[in-house]
Length: 95
Image (cartoon, rainbow, N blue to C red; front, side, top):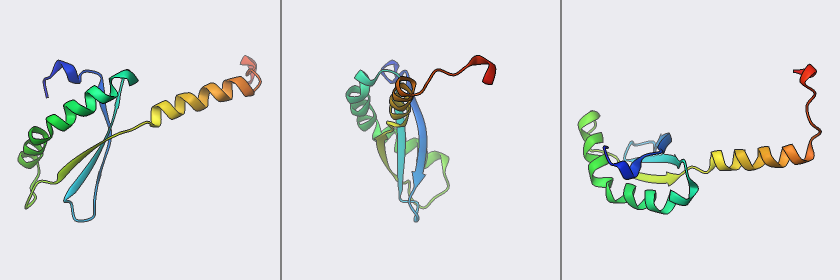
C-alpha cells in the first residue's frame, strides 16, 4: 500500500483461524496518537487488502481480515520504566 498516511505502521503478527477463513492482523504505530487515524485508514482499505491477499494465496476464498492494535510494545516500555524506578542501578562491571 503506497499511502503516506500509513507511514510508520508495522505489522507485528498475523493469526489465522483453523479453517483459514479469518486472518487477525496485529499492528503497531510509531506515535500512539495516530492509533485512531490508522485504524480508520486500515478499515477503509480492507477491500484492497483482501483483494491483494486473494491474489497472493491459493485458497477457495480469501480470508476475512480483522485489524487489531498490538499494544505489546507500549506495555513493554511501561514495564521497563517501572523496573528502572524500583530496581537498583546495574553496575557496568557485572555485564
